[in-house]
Image (tube, rainbow over all chains, first blue to last red; front, side, top):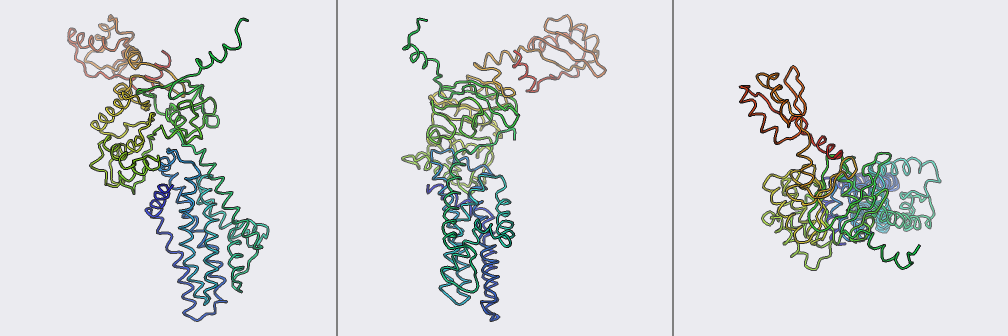
Length: 236
Length: 320
C-alpha cells in the first residue's frame, strides 16, 4: 500500500499539473490581504472571498485536479496497468490513492483558508474554515476518484458537478443542496464558529452524514469498479 | 444403460483441460463487433507464439488471459482459477502490454523495485537486481525511464513483469521497436524461460519472429483460431501455397511461352506493363525462371512477389 501511495504522490507532483495547485490558493490569500490592507471590514469581503471563491471554486477545483490526477491520469497514460498486475486487493489500491489525494487537497486548501480566516481577525473562525476545508477535501476527492473510473472524461464531469450542480442549481433549486458538498462545507464552518459571513443552508446533521456518505459510497463503488477494470484492445 | 453412477466423476476430470492457461469456447464482442470468436486453447510450459494480422484479436485474447477483460462467453482460467476479477492470479503471472506506458519519473531500479514490493516479495531489492540483470539493464538502472529508448523501456517492463518469477508470462508484441540485437537478446531470454518450465505466450504479426522463438504457434485470423500447433507445419503450409509474381522482361511473350511448360507455373497473364505469373511452388519457380531466361536470351527487368501481404498469407492459412 505504501508503494502505491509513493508512486501516486510522485506521479502527482512529477506532472506539470501540480503547478496548477498554486495559483488558486495564492489568489485567495492575495484577495483577502488586499481587502485587509485597504481596511475593508471583513463582513464586507468575507462572504465573496471565503464562500464564493474559497468554498465554491478553490476547494472543489483543487480537489478535481488532485482527485482525477491520482487515478485518471494513470488510466489515461496506461501506467495503472503496472499497479493492477499485482496481487493487491483493489481496496488497498483505491484507499492508497484516495488518501494521497485527500491529504494533498486538504493541505492545499485548508492552509490558505486558515490564513484568510486569520485575516478576518479571528483565529477560531480560521480554524473552523480549515476544518471545513478538510472535510470538503475528503468528500470531493472521493467523488472525483470515483469519476475517474466511471468516465473517460472525469474532469469535464467534475466541472459539470461543480459549476452546474453546485454553482447554478445550488443557488436556485434548494432541493439540490442536499447533494452539494459545497453546502456541507459552508454549514460545517458556520456551525463550528458562527459569523455573518457564512450562512449554512442545510442542517448540520445533513452536512455531516452526507459528507460521510459521499466518502463511503464513492470509495466502495470505486473499489468495485477497479476490480472490473478493462483494458481497451487494439480495435479501439 | 450399464454406466454406473460412479463413472461420471472419474471421467469428468479427464475432460477438463489441464493446461496452465485454458480458454474454453471464449468469445468477446464489443456491441455487435465480434473481436474473438469461440476460441478454445490450452497452453503449457514452453514458448507459444500468438500469430495473426493486426486487428485479428490477439490483444483481446491476451487481455482476457491477463484478467483485464471479461469474456462475453466462455471461460478463461490460469492454473484452473478464473483470470477475471481475481488479483491473486498476478502472484504467478506477468504481463507486458503493447502500450509502453511506464512511470517516466522513476528510475529503472525504482520502478522494478516498486513492482517487487507490490508483489510483497521477501527480498524486493535482490529480486529487482536479478530481474534487471536478466534483461541486461543493470548499467542504466539508475537512469530515469523517461530518458530511455524504446528498446530499453521494453526491457525494463519485461524486468518488472519478471521480478516475481512468475510461471506465466504474457507479452503483447514484445519485439516492436527493438533493434536486431535487442530482439535477439529478448528471443534468447524467452527461449531460456520457456526451457526452464515457464509458460510464455507472446503475440506477433510477424511469422519470422514467432518461428525463431516459439515451438508452438496459435494463429488467429479475424477473431478465430485459424491454426494451432507446431510452427513447422504451419510454415510448410505457408511456403507451399501458390505465389503470385509480377515479372517484366525484354520479351514477356516469349518468356511466357517458355514458362507455361514448367510444372511449377500454374498460370500467366500478359498485361501492357509486364506479366503476372502464378507459381504453385515458390522454390521451384524461383530456380527455374533465371535458367529459362538465360536459355532464351531474355533479359529480366523485374521480379516482384505481389501477394506477400500478411493478410493474404493468413487468409490462405484460414482456407487450408
